[in-house]
Amino acid sequence: METKVHHRFLEILPGLLTWTTLILPVILSLFFPVGVAIFLLFFTTFWLYQSLEFSVMILRTYFQYKQALLFPWSDALRLLTAHSNQNGNLDQPAIAKKNMKSLLEKHAQIIALGQAKDPFAIFHLVVIATCGEDLSVLRQSIQKIADSHYDLSRIVILLAGEERDRERAIRNAEALKLEFGSQFAQFYFTLHPADTVGEVRGKGANIAYAARTTVPGFLKEFGCDPSDVLVTTLDADHCVHPEYFACLTTTYLTTPDRGKKAYQPLPLFYNNIWDVPLINRMIAFQNSFWHMIESGRPYRLRNFASHAQSLDALLQTDFWSSQTIVEDGHQYWRSFFTFNGQYEVIPLFIPIYQDAVQGETYTKTLWGQYKQLRRWAWGASDIPFVIQKIREKGKAIPAFTKYINFYRLVEGHFMWATAPVIITLTQPIPRLINESFANTVFSYNMGIILSHFFTVALVGIFASVWITILMAPPIPHRTLLGKTWLRLSILVQWLFLPLITIVFGAIPAIESQTRLMFAKYLDFQITPKVRVPSNIHAVQGNLPR
Image (cartoon, rainbow, N blue to C red; front, top):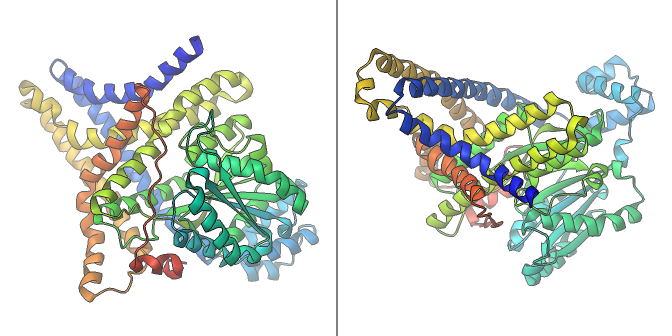
């Protein structure tokens, strides 16, 4: 009983912190406007610092992204084999010719540590979660895997369907196995039982069941060591870059303690970017940029959507959680505590293309977008889990490691829910509520300082606009007027930034935290995957490569 009460108290904390931050400035403005103004200045200063940091990170990640696209990852795998066979020694001309000196230096350290592996012994198990998607969506995703610049005989497909969508799932699996089965080492299919006791309905329960039921037979069939298997989880609409598997394998083989790592590609919501409404397009670009920013700060990077871990690591965590609708971010914390804090996520800078939210109607598209963001914001439910695990682990994890990571978790969800509202709406509160304060020199100077802050923050918007123009996929075949409008929309969409950050930023986060406060737990709701003829160009290969 005490444990349940304690857990409920911890669930209340995120929402309590958020609502206190939003409400207290309004109340205190009546009695202590100077204190509120000072708090707002500090808050805005912190927000400005983050905005400038984001600008730097997105620019740096963009150049790393371009380098990753140009790097010959397939050649790198062959060179690593030669490097291993020669015990870490290759002549300088060969290294210079391949422009891979830094990579081979990392590999030399791996050889010295006795952790070298044969690049061509690595298997890839690709787990694709599906429920309710049309065959065309899955076909495009698997076709992208088949188009990879990698030995397909080392790739195994595991299509994870749901019992509640049994008829469609079986029909799709049979068609896909007939079409693609002979191209890969193996093509597995599972049906996750519906309404399993003790599970939360969602992707995590599905892929965990699929892996648990398939992996024993897979290991027996191919006779491979779990440390030689990399497991990538994909949603039904995810389209891998042709170099993804080569990049993942190369990074895995040149990373010390590779099993205690996750490997995170760049999620870019570009599959149908030109077919969604302007607001959804703006959000898709923003979401893509956010993950670029996080990739530029690996110490903050967390598992998201499509990511990879070694099979031996997943066996130690019993695969993914079946108790949450945000299994990706939660997997970071499960791994973090399993390995006593000796765990991190490695950015790959190679993209995996995903769908922007698109429904059958404009209203359904906006509502679907909101529900997706609300589900992502449910990651605040990790806060009680992390607090309890910190107590359980005690001194097994260094104090700085666990507390700095916990701070980043709380700060991320706190700023997500509060920053757009405070920056946009509450700064004038002390002057509006307290007329005597509005006429003070302090109030006047505060307005000047904040206006300068916002001017400096425009640097981040300009950087984002520039990166949007550089990274946006080609516009599909349209009329001249249509193409002109789509190009202009890249600029026009930023006018909606204040509205979007509140309606599709703060409010979903506030709702999730409030639901958690009152034990109104979210169910997993699948984001519909809609395909229209005009967006087929994207998933069939006209994306940036």
